[in-house]
Image (cartoon, rainbow, N blue to C red):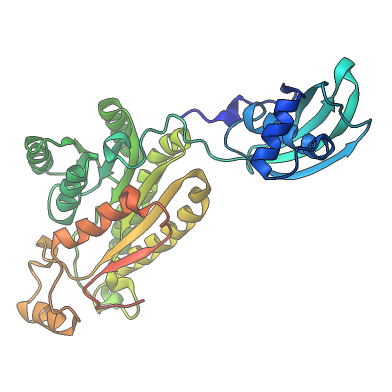
Length: 383
């Protein structure tokens, strides 16, 4: 995306010319419902011309005039005189998108009339961003761990929403290809890529393939997680903690890092990390390594949301409760029944429940939501 701020430099100049005549005075009176009085018109003319200069020429459309410091340095303009408002860019603050512009107003023969300084803020440009309400124009989304279960459901729903999707798998590329084939048969856009999500170089290469294939990368969904092995915290080896941290935290870092160049380029994007309702409040026994990684992931989401928000990027989290997937296949039926009974909605989640929440947060309807953790757990936790 082209940012007009990048095309501005200290020393840039522009002017705006206006010839005073009776028609201008009459138009002013009709617009303001004030008397068609030349003196009244001329009293307000300085601000009017400077506003026109700023809004039409330097910096142009999309600027917000926030402060002025000007003074009359010569006789007021006279009817019939040709006036010239001149602006020269004196200072640029790119971090704040703020400009300081020296302004002067001259009459016939370069006669000085007004001089001062205007401070403006250049709003983020929408030029060349495409239709931000149309997922087809936003680019591709990488979904890690998407060969089955919740990840496959997320990728499929995002494709149905109109996004191009990259189906990531670390081992079973054949399953990822099957998910991608199903999306393509329904008219969607999908690419299956095998990559270890904890390998930063491999994730960067996967992002490059997404851009080469679909032209743009909108963001990613960090869904991949190691197999869940329940054991008491005191019996959990550090290697178990490290395994979850590598895939879930390091993997999320790798995805965020791979997306950053595209986010900086387009000034827009979205990211969702999959957390867990088990990390809310008192964790269940046996989940120490898993909930430790999820808690770290929640802190990472808030940190990135804070820093990337001004760049037009939203970072959120969806935290599923117990969901009917392969992850709980080995869990005793009694434990599943107890969870259902303790859940206000009296059922476990389906993968589609999680996918609905993720697709909402990745799409344009969530344009003003960032840094949030959305539990999808039937009310089991209510943070």
